[in-house]
Image (cartoon, rainbow, N blue to C red; front, side):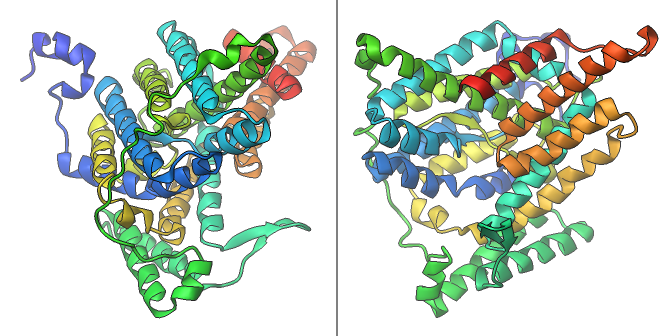
Length: 458
């Protein structure tokens, strides 16, 4: 039996992961492996994007893995939550194509902006500003965020496998029924059947089987497989130093008055996107996992946000763009991950991947698509608890749900949802009887104002 001294010891206060509560380690490790496999694509994609700036791809592979591992370890140790971190998609594209290539800013200066963003986030987290934002989101909106993230990651899976494709006339359309699409469909059916039968690790099994099927096709028809983004592993072992990009932050850019304004604009964009993508992910995944407390708040939210901030700051020093909490963490949560051991497991695998990167890089998107689509379905089930009978709650929730996949951004979907929530309820309160007026959190109103300013000026 745990004593009060054990629970409140300095070690457990600093690292709640080491509290002596019962933990199903087999389940946590399985969840961590599942989370890692669904986000392992970042090992290949992040270096591919950032190398367009002139940064060496080999060093970027190592830095991507090491920064992700550090972020996962921080999340597990400090917050005891099953969320994995790595360089964020979208933010890496903004870093490379908008800041460095578009604005002709040296990549060293772009890393400095990411570093500055991390420092600002650490300050905001220590003063509990970010935690207040997370906890101020109304319950129905939290459920909507979960559903919206579900549609968002399902769309990532559907597009990554080629089941849906871009179309100039209709925005999206049904793609061709290629071998990649077939692999994704087989994997999805396999996961569904195994889950229905109660088989543990069904999502992980689906990813592994889909990968083997895709690699089998690549052996039979390598030329067509390459067109579909399916490649055989080019080897087993590989490691490259990150020395060419580590510790390259450069503040000299801000010594010129003409550059200060653009630098602040870059930092603010990183801030907004990272802030609300992370908030949306924490709220949505925690809600689906049933991890919210009695008041509907995310447990250890402040510590989770601090881990995210520290990982971003350290990541900039290692040479990568903003490190953020990955929505793919939901796959591990749905496999039963509930503690920081899930994140620790994912972190260990990122360290291993630094030396076995050819294997993990070769996992095709059509193999991870079934997991994303299935988890999207599971997360969408949260919408049944939304009070759609109250239009002042239901309409903003719907806009949030629809906004995330349609803007292809968790942060932008949350922006539209919060703005609509505040506007609808303020206008309603102006015409409603006093006893029928809705109470709106001051924090949510401030959020709406910031979102409006962001839409106008950024």
